Length: 389
Image (cartoon, rainbow, N blue to C red; front, side):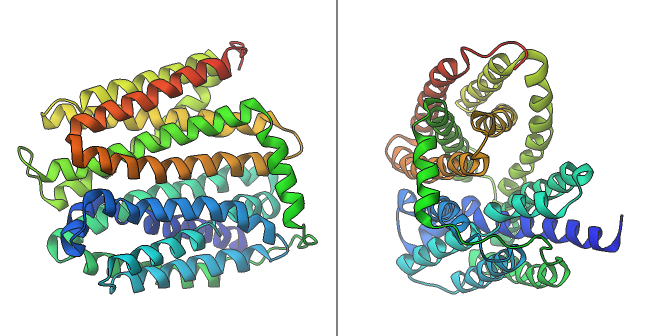
C-alpha cells in the first residue's frame, strides 16, 4: 500500500467516524436533555428527528453541487459539523439547540453523499471494496463510539461536558482528515442543473419497486432507532434503574450489525433475496417481542436479535435498490437513504408521543405494526424473485 493510499484510507475512516458519532449523540441522553430543557420526551426526540430529517434533505441537495471538488465538499462538511456540535454544547435554549441540530443535519450530508463517489473515482478497482469497508467501519464505529462516550461522560459529569468533549475530539480529527485526504484527481464534472436531477428522481419514483424499497427503509430504520432511543429511557427507570454509563455500553451491540451485514449479503445469494429477507425480518420481530419482558438479560437478547435482523435487512435493501436501474444508480441510492433517514426522523418523533402516553408497551405495539407492514410490502416486492436472487 502506497503512502497516498494509506492517507486516503485513514481519512475516509476519520470522515465516517466524525459524521456518525456527531449524528446520534443525543440518543443516549434523552432523559437528561428532557430535565435540562424542561421539555417532554416527545419534544426531546426532535433533537434526533430534526437532524436526521435535514440530513435526508441534504442528501437530495448536495449532489446537485457536483461541480465542487469532492475533497473540498467533505472537508467543509466535517469541519462545519464539528464546530456546530461544539456550539450546541453551550446552548441553553431548546429551540436554538434544535436549530443548530438541524444545521448539523444539512452539514452532515456532505460526507455520505460524496464519500462513495470519491472512493469509486479515486481508488483502484481491486481495492474499492476494501476502502469502502474501511469507510463503513468508520461510520459503524463512530455511531457506536459517539453514543458510548457521551453516555459515560454524561454520567460522570454533564451532557454538555460530554458533547463538548466529543466535539473537540472530532474537530481535531476533522483537521487531520483535511490535511491527509488527497485531492480528487478526477476532473470535476460540469454543473448539472437541479431540474435535471429532479427529473431523474421523478422518473425513479414512478417505479413501484423503488417506492416499496424506500418504504422498507422508512419502516425498518424508524423501528430500529425508536427502539434504541426509548429503551435507554426505560432502562434508567425502575425496576432497571441503570446508570447512564451502564446503558451506554448497550450500544456496543451495534458491532453485531457489522457481522450481520456481511452474513446476510452472502446469505441472499444462497437462499435468494426473498427467503433471506424474510429471515431478517423474523429475527427483528422476535427481538422486539423479547423486549416486552421486564428482565434485563432477555431485553439485551431482544436488542441483539433486533440489531442482527435490522442490519441484515438493511444490507439486502440497500443493495437491491441499485439493481432497479442502470442509468441512475446514485439517484436510486439517494432515494433509499432519504427513506432511511426520514423514517428515523418521523417514527422516532411518533415513538416519543407513544412512549409518553403508553410507555414501553406502546413502543412494542408500534414497532410490531411497523415491521409487520414491512413484511407485507417485502412479500409484494420480492414475490417475483427467484432462489438465485
